Each structure stands twice: as structure tokens, then as C-alpha cells.
Image (cartoon, helix red, strand yellow):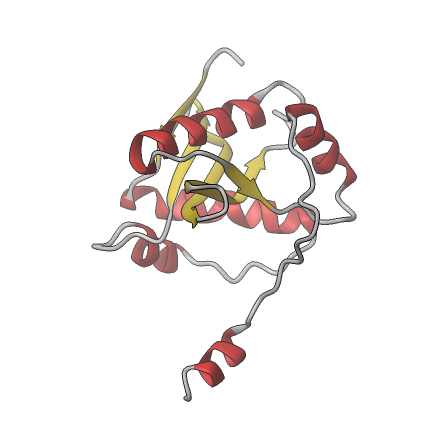
Length: 159
């Protein structure tokens, strides 16, 4: 992995970060609703909703991670939720995914004193699941991920 650097993304990286996340969406068959403007606003304003890392080989983005703090009274502290992790096809299998997660862990520890890392993997993404298994991730038992979409959230707020 010589020649690949990992650094924290800033507001000037919004276009390149969005392009990396669009590659991730395409790779896993998801729609991509993100935009550079949305990332810039949500991640680099007064109250950032996330932090991001970019992996670069020269000028080319070959990996990205987007993550946010979480807090658990069960786990007795703060943690980090990795919502997006992408490594370019040409760079996969060379340890960059693990390097990105390690960089997330170090940053989350420094900023939030993170005690755990959480992420979600699609049931049909065997390659990703195998990668996370090799790193020691374990499926949570007794939990079901629930999501309230935009309409449900507006309804909850009475709008």
C-alpha cells in the first residue's frame, strides 16, 4: 500500500468525497441521493453530522470512509458508526479497507473517546461480510435495525 495516504476530508473535498460515495452506491446497487452540496452542508458546518477520510494515490481517490458518533448506555460510552466504507476495485485486497477503519478508530478515539465501532453490512454482500469477519466483527444478536424514512420522520414531528 505504498504511495497511498489517508487524510481527513474538508469542505473543499466535497466533490471528490461525493464521487467516492457514488462509486460505493453503484458497487452495492444502491441509489445515490448524495450531492457535494449536501455533504458540504452536513459535514463541514457549525454542527457537523459526520467526519470523513479520503485515501489517495497521488491525485486519485482510492478509498473513503464516512462516520459519526453514537452513544450507548449499554456499552457505557461513545462509539463510532461507519455508515460508508469504500475501496476502489483496483485497490481491493491490499489492506486499504483495514487501514481506513484503523484511521477511523484512531480519529474517533481522539475526538469522542470511542469505545466501540459499529457498522451495517447488507446480507447479500458476501465479500464485505467476509472482510468484516476477518477483522473480528460479529453480528449483533437480539437487535433489529429499524429506520424511520423522511415521510415517517415528518409524520412523527407532526408535519
